[in-house]
Length: 80
Image (cartoon, rainbow, N blue to C red; front, side, top):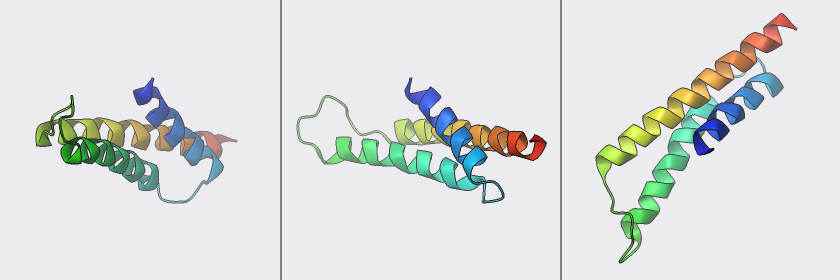
């Protein structure tokens, strides 16, 4: 569900705001993953341990899905 929300969020932004940079929703998705992992870094005795690899993989997946969604939203707007 979270991965779908990155895609759908990028798609909606691509449809609502055409001709604005496509990279904005993708950067927002990466930063949201960064904040979640950062919280796990500062929490004492947390169940989720901080890991740079987890941050990079999650950020790349979120970035890619949001970028693809925004690209599809832009293409849909151009066709209409």
